[in-house]
Image (cartoon, rainbow, N blue to C red; front, top):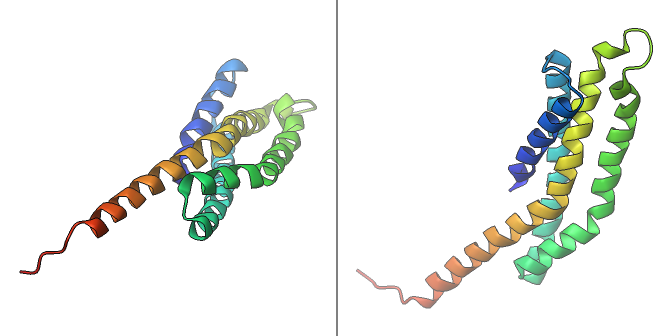
Amino acid sequence: MIITALPAALAGIVWMLFATETTLSVPALTGAIMCMGVATANSVLVISFARERYEELGDPIAAALEAGFVRFRPVLMTALAMIIGMAPMALGLGEGGEQNAPLGRAVIGGLIFATFATLMFVPVVFSMVHKKQGAKAAASSESPHVAH
């Protein structure tokens, strides 16, 4: 469930590099790795909180909704701190600044998409997976056990 936000991060990286006409390079791939790390950490925040709430509430949809709302600000603050911090690098200003610009651009594009996916898509996947697991557990407990 945690890695379900990573395809969105990859899409954001590709989109940003394409939109800024930046070639795929070693700094861009380094930025992609950095972006994946932050996106994964944000997803871990949401999923761990959702699991705690699921154990208390027993309802996967309520747990996912609460995780999305309660973890909204920490996830957004983490992503925005990284995006704002990378903005000067992404602009490529100064002498030799264009060398590391792909790194900043990849991080910014990936985090924009990954943050949206972490806050909207990851809780939905959590609720769907746990709802299906709950249905399987209920079905297996209702069926009589046959002794052989």
